Length: 314
Ligand SMILES: Nc1ncnc2c1ncn2[C@@H]1O[C@H](COP(=O)(O)OP(=O)(O)OP(=O)(O)O)[C@@H](O)[C@H]1O
Image (tube, rainbow, N blue to C red; front, side, top):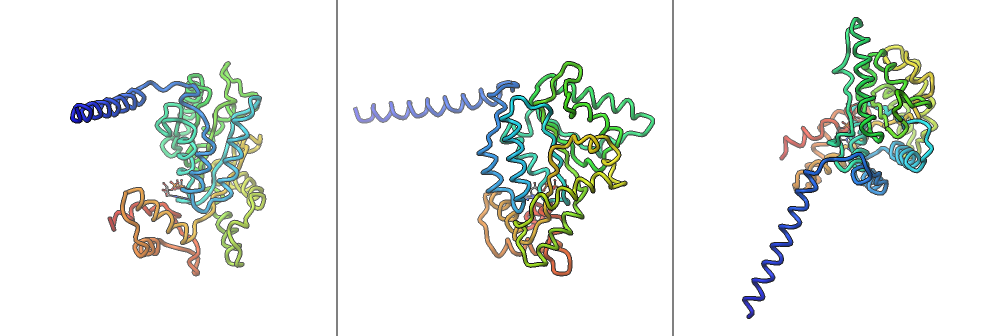
């Protein structure tokens, strides 16, 4: 009797586990649709990710959360949400884009509605610019026709051909009903290093004066940043109507990272590999990065090379 009961329990548990696995398999192979099942902003999840995983970027966290909250709760939005993320290499611009994608699309960056355009891979010869412009427009148009809630990430904007930037402009405008497609629910994120020098200079000044970076306010950097992007004659970005027509909703500065932030990146990297964190190794790895200026306050490459440095120890 006792053994019959045990077998029943085992059979039920096995059936349950198999059911769960089957369900998971069916879900993962299901076709992704452009609906709320697959695309819903998890603002709490994003806030938690910013708090726990993103180090040293208090301005970016705050602005991005507010911007996404605002645009998702406004059914009468007149234009797509456009955010321009600026800062030195390795400060978290791509990382943040990934966190946004993960908290908006069930498939994150793997979603077929998230599109990444790497500008350095598309620098056409002047002779072919018309063709490239038209291809880029067709690409955006085609993707938004398939799903209004598409997200576009344009990486290395500062290296993008001005002609291509101009080609994007009609989609960002207030009257964003191009070719009967409604672009107002789309999100455009632009990443660049432009303005990184100004942001770094400003942060350095604050730290040298014994203040905390958290005392830096967006308003102190924003104006400077938009004018830098606008004026910088070698950035490629300035020439275009993008800035002139105020099509960028938010200029978001990414501050250079300090030693303590690099240490946090090292801890996160070790934890992600399921390894035990030893504080002495954390300090050794963080110390092996290059810092500037003489006082060694800021990391030259942010957390960019942390993963490869961790490789040397695990
Ligand atoms: N502020 C940060 N908080 C947590 N992790 C970070 C941060 N910045 C960078 N990292 C880590 O370093 C890696 C590289 O950073 P990321 O690619 O986001 O830099 P980036 O600013 O986009 O640089 P680039 O301008 O060279 O493209 C990230 O995948 C992440 O693991």
